[in-house]
Each structure stands twice: as structure tokens, then as C-alpha cells.
Amino acid sequence: MKKIISFIAALLLASAAFCQNITFEKVCNQLAKNSITKGDFQQIKTMNSAKGKRELKSNGEFILYLDGIMWKTLKPFPSTMIVGVDYVVQIAGNGTKTVKDTSENQTFSNVAATVVAVFSNDFTQIQKNFSVTFTTEGKDSWKAVLVPKDKTIASVMSSITLKGTYGASSASLESIIMSEGSDNSTTYIFTNQNYPKELTKDEKSYFLSK
Image (cartoon, rainbow, N blue to C red):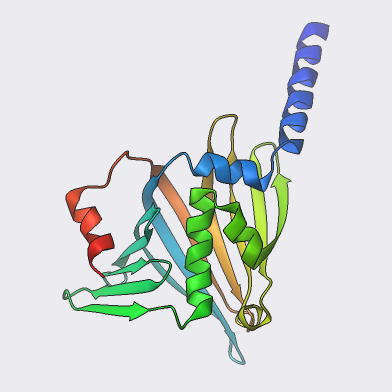
């Protein structure tokens, strides 16, 4: 019995030490090992008004790629949006495509650049635009709160909160919460993640469609 108790205690101590050694930079480094992340997402838009809180939900499939992010919404209405660092492509359910340049929209560009920077381990880009508060939650979970340094951006986007898990040789991003200055927020929850080596021909076409 003493050996069992000693073994459990050793595991707990090792787990505690492991958590203390986790940093946001290490998490980003692990995430960057996968150049492509695919899976399912649920989007929850929370809007506060004088009539109370309202939530709008949608779900579909996503691709996180070094060239940007693709959101393929399946419900409630089919549509596809590809977000790059300097562009947004929207494809309606009937195939109609709209391309927007985000170079004049610093907020949109900054958010997209941040997510891409996290997955490409570009710490210079992250630290340039955000103050980062990183904490661990439990033995294998982490949270990073990114607060914009630019006052203009902060007035619209107060923070971006990233949450995920971390192991000895891998890390995952499980949710993103974008909090607006108006107390509204958009949450993305990621599930069924997988990490293919290459995109299919059709998937590549999304990122070339601009």
C-alpha cells in the first residue's frame, strides 16, 4: 500500500512540475508542428442589449492553414468564409463569391494575423500586437488571454482568449473567444480535430479563390 501511495504521489508531483514548465511559447511551438488542422466547429455569437442576452449558433467544418482559416458553415445556412491576413472571401450557398480587402480594416486583419501567428509560432507578431497572460488550468489544460496594445483596436476587440490542452509532445486549440468592447462576444469551439499532411485539391482551391 505504501508503494502505491508513493507512486501516486510521484505522479502528482511530476504532473505539477510539468504544468509549471508550460509556457505559451511552448504551446505555439507544438501547434506549429501541424501545418494543417481540420475539424468541426460551433460558433456562438452572444449579443447583449436592453432586451437581454441573445445567442446565435451555427456549426460546420474548419481548416486552419498557414495561409489562413476556412469556415465552412453547414447549419443553419450553408456558406463558406476564407480569412487571410489581408483578405476575406465569402461564398454563399448558391456559389456567389465576394472578396474583401482587409488592409483598411486593422481589427479584422489583426485577428486573422494573430491566429495564423499562433499556429506558425510567430511570437514576434503576437508580442507586437498583444499583451499575453498565460495560465494553466488543471494538469493538461492552458489558457492565453491576448489584450490588444493598440487603443483603436482595443475599443472594438477587448481581448482574444485561447484555450486548449497540452501534452509532452503535442498541443491542441479547443476554443477561441473574441470579446468585443461592447460586451458582445464570438466563441468558436473546435472538435474532432485531425492533422493531414496536405490539403485536397478542392481544399487548396479555397485559399486560391481570392
